[in-house]
Length: 392
Image (tube, rainbow, N blue to C red):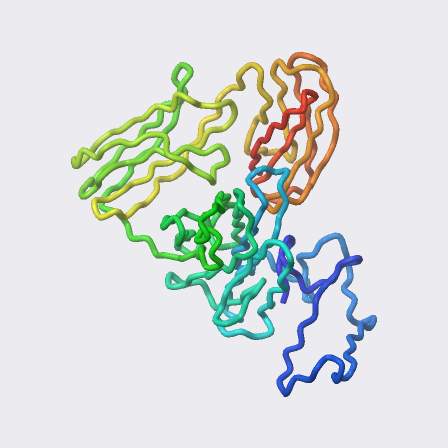
């Protein structure tokens, strides 16, 4: 079966390794009694073209057909950390929830292991039927050290399902939203408590969210002095407990910055202030919480704040012309090392920049960069590391 770039693919590229798992029935023999096995490749197996991994024998664009959620376990939240292991769940009409040739067994390793548990099988790729609100992905995670890891989720063509996904943490007894439209980054801590390293600590559940008894007629964000003012207007407000203002620098990972109690009126206007607005793009949304604990979200609004002195920033962000416009504001002279990482931790670009003292702009060309979220890591002459999340 074929998956898009960054996920296991049916096309074997030059220099690429792969594993073979026999699925034939019958009585198994001991290895030293088994007949030799062989795999033969002929000229007919070759595929024309090159340079990509997301084409099939029928030259179809598999990325528009595939529905998937990949999950990666990184050794920490910084871009200098590496991916320890990962897996992917694939959904589609031609698959089913039974174990068959479309699934890939997980090969365990001596370090951290992060797979999908389906019945009594441990998988690295799980092919399932079409995604529904009753689906749950059960993760199996082992050999963890006492440290902070980061789970990174990357959805493919799941934004139109009308569903919401949540990561359930059985140890902390919490749930965190997992975006089905963009990448999600969730830190997890392994402590001296053995339950924090339980193999069945995490699962992702999918839900059909019901509409709440309120309508947000508008949401806005505007700059006011050195602060950002976030406002929203509502109608048909009934049974609402509170509104929570959430902020993000990447448009995906949000955190709460303010709470406003609901007035329970037919119409109302609310506002909150972000007095810690950073330079560049700031994203905001309103989380609506009903009396019975149900939650929903408003649309996301953004505001671009001018860069502050003594900072390194990217403007505009999201980038719009396949060029990263890197802004140096009152920075010391010297050589700056730049690396651009994909959401999966792959280095896409690496270069050195010589900056003269003061302020300047450096344009970094990124041709054929797919839409998504990226991390720009900048090592300064003073030995410090700056990380800027970039959206394409």
